[in-house]
Image 1 (tube, one colour):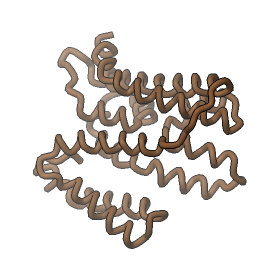
Image 2 (cartoon, helix red, strand yellow):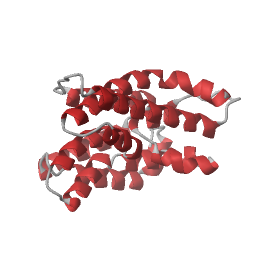
Image 3 (cartoon, helix red, strand yellow):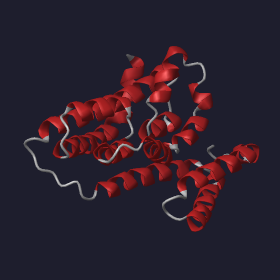
Length: 229
């Protein structure tokens, strides 16, 4: 209970954004011809907001498993870096670790990585409840939107900007914790080079691979400089 009480205040802002986006996603699924069971199950199992929005078009398109896999990998590949950053923090969390890995969305990562956990609160349970609460917010919002979609007309234009804004906020939070911004420079330079070399439709996977290689190669000097890895 102490861990739940400590985790809940950190997730309140996430609740507001997740319910807005979740309800919007549920309504979007409904107006696209799917019953509320689809957003309920997909939000619970996939638990990846941007991928779930894109999955609507995938479900309405001809069956293309390889293309679907590659697109999904490109969209969610950033979680590879989240996982690397959380290796030490998830160590020793016991049976909670599989769920922590499964439920590590952008917002849960940001909170669990940067939160100052009180000394009297178990670290593993704190991260577990942050992850669980965010998961509940998203699933409940998506399900509610699916139920409301049959009676409410909703214009989904502009949702892409909302998602972008969320990622920008997460980036700024991490930049404030870095001392020399080596990781940020690596990310920007590699991404820009891959964007020029591969184009906007194909740069994501090469960029992720290049960033991963450079962060691995320069891990020790980056950590000595006090940057977040």
